[in-house]
Image (cartoon, rainbow, N blue to C red; front, top):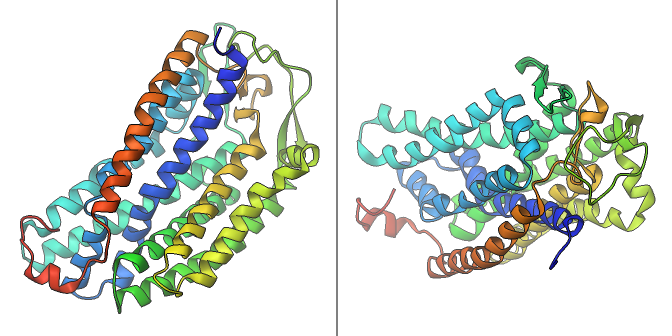
Length: 381
């Protein structure tokens, strides 16, 4: 065999993380710009400038989350079944905002000149950025706390949670981390793509968001030492069949930090989250802010990577039936499916990356007021 099932499972865990990082770095600045929209765009021209900084990119950027959801469905069917049923209402809100109201607000805002019409869609732009950013963090927070599901002997999944129970303090804190991370990223993107006064306002909010991110990321790490984490109580067959019930799992206070005790070099990953945010804050107003955006991207990689390292090898822990928790070793598709998907990724992901890079290169440069005021109304937002 080219790759055994154990190697494929690990590869797909890494690929899933890369897809989520790609989404957060690309579509993340779209969400950040949307959240900053009412605070940095004061006039009609400024609003159109801000919208046109992301206008050519936001649709293509959402390819990453489609790829991520598809990867979960094909590579981790148990994870897909639990997550999309347990978080059903959150997924529905995500669809309404990220998938419906946000695209519609971009497209419809300029269709009519009436003040009420445009103010309404301005609010939808903001909501379309705020709600998804918060939901992403809220989901991660709940996963770290454990999800109330279990499998019966026939491997049928049962979810025992309630929507209101998702809004726990730690999960809300994770939502704030997500929002501040994307506001920082979006503000630094605007610093590259716009001129004063929008650029100055964007830098102002990006720096404050980075400070908020550092504080809440540190608080979240400290908080994890007091939260029961999940640990394997016996060895797991990494090449065994995908049956979540064939293992023993325990909960230990501070258990989520065990990976950093066993592998101290893994501390580089959360360190990257802190250092990237600090450097982004310090370099935001220097030059054309490209280095700040680069550091912001590193911070995103570090923060998302921290979640993955912290939870490894868990994907979705269960807090009502510990042995039903899903691992990368017992929740995957079969060998043929993983191998076939890997070949597809090796072919199509480079194409997506090359095409996306070409689009960003061709549409580089700042969006200026003169271009908005003189531009073709049908081709601009």
